Length: 256
Image (cartoon, rainbow, N blue to C red):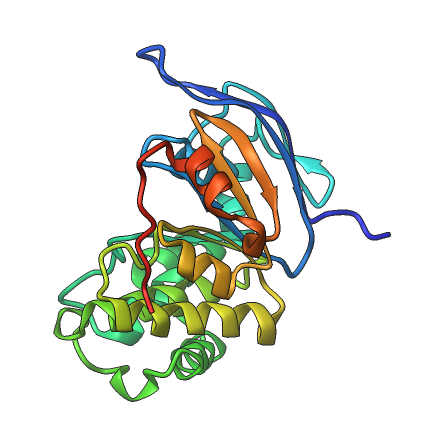
């Protein structure tokens, strides 16, 4: 049996104000999974992804990435981790006035030397790969447009292409469709699924809508108050589990 690509062991995150966002979270992630994290706002979902990516420093516990503990990494080690564990966000984080392909090439900066990153000396291979990934997410023809001329869904697809230029082993997606309309949600999720299946990249995503979770996730983990309350097949989350995760009186919102 192959070693999991990621293992979290008793991960704890306490913020300086005393808020304990994660309370001893432990789980494994297999290579090639499409794992989705669900839970109420404030349940620890975003904190969890940011600890894995090392945007946040865990308070204690282990994060084993290919068997190596990255929880206490510092400096250049963290930058190296972020090239292999890429991340996309709810609000895209593009440079509006730059072209689409320029935004995608930004994903290569972490892999370049200081001079190259300062002056934007991108190789032909980098430029070819940027266009390849734009084509993969269906917007290659918009490479020379300004990013702020794209719709929200198209901008998120640019963000996915930018993350792919890092050649990551894991792609973290923090509420990637939370600001998009229902039809666009499915388009973006379809491309994330394509990345997962065609490129074999492991995906860990935070999502709100259970209907999307059931459609795209191979496995789901539910957080409540910084602790895991469910782990397993998303199709097994019935009304009783839904109430346990989201609280009595919560109503499921469907995106069809």
